[in-house]
Amino acid sequence: MSVTAADSVPTTPSTTQSEQTPKDDVAKTVQASSGNCYKILEVIGKGGFGMVHRAIREPRDRQSDGAPRFVQQYAVKTEQESSIFLEVDVLSAAQNKVHFCKLWDQGQDPQTGVHYIVMSLLGPNLVEARNDICGRRFSLSSVVRIAMQTLHAIEELHSIGFLSRDVKPSNFALGRINSEKRRLIYMLDFGIARRYVDKYGVLLPERESGGWRGTSRYCSLNIHRRLDQSRRDDVESWFYMVVELTSGHLIWGHLTRCEKPQIENLKALARSVYRRSFLSGCPSDYNTIFDAIDRWGFKTQPDYCRILVCLMRVMKANKIEFDDPYDWELSPEAAQKFDRRKRAPRVVKDEVGHILSYVVKKK
Image 1 (cartoon, helix red, strand yellow):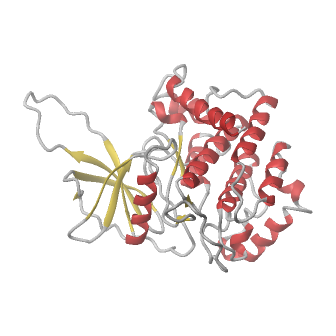
Image 2: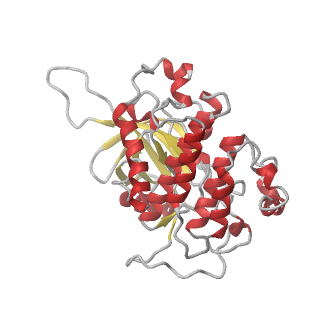
Image 3: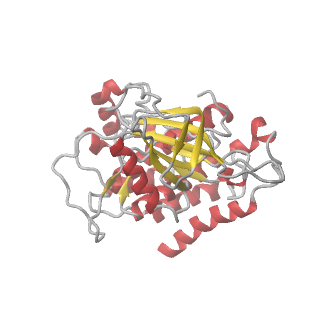
């Protein structure tokens, strides 16, 4: 993408069902249902369901003293109608959660009929942060804490009654690099999310076939087998993501989405003869996490706390502290934008507090 990592809000194809490049049909200025007008500055992301634009809100009046206004930037995301409503449902329900961006506005362009939502502008996604800022590899210190935050984000999504069905590194983004939220990780892209409980919070019955949803590189074995997805499948996808971030590879990573049977076979063999190769370069506690996930069934509520405890053991064994700088805070690019000695203490406190309080509460 032709934007700096500090300001990008990327969106990526959520599923192999939508491979075409979306058209940029949004007008140069859009008016939301609130009456606010947003001036579109540039496209900063493209995906299978829509596009993301950088925008600013146009002032309704002008300051009499001629003083410059503070101009806040936003992300305006356009999507297919069904997907945009899902995004609104999820983000509306998650506004009090830690790892979800703020939903500011929504509307429909009267000229083109394109639906859009206005969200907080975030930083690079995990793929961009790793490749463009951190030399194509995260340290174990960063990965373990990324794993904790992203798992907490998934637990928050499940707590409001939704499955992601597309957990992967590009669907998590950092706060803007030059802000105090640079340490927080946000969950993105809910175009193929699905409610797994009814309006009373009761688990929906398992369907005979779930169809294909997600990204072949990270989706669970159940998806390859066309079984209905549940919370455990989101966590399995999360685990593949964490293994890749830790070791730098997946044993099926060289295969394309056109080779799904081969990917499925290697995921199955990762449980047995290829297990050592699959977890090569990973802490031994990853074996415990993998075994736990494989024991869960469709109705099982994932034991997020047990996984967090495993990750905290990894931190202790490797002398990793919660307030250690992340790799992107140590990068030359980031160093130009903030003083590394200022570790955003309030955000560090929030980051540690949410994770530790969750572990203590569940014990």
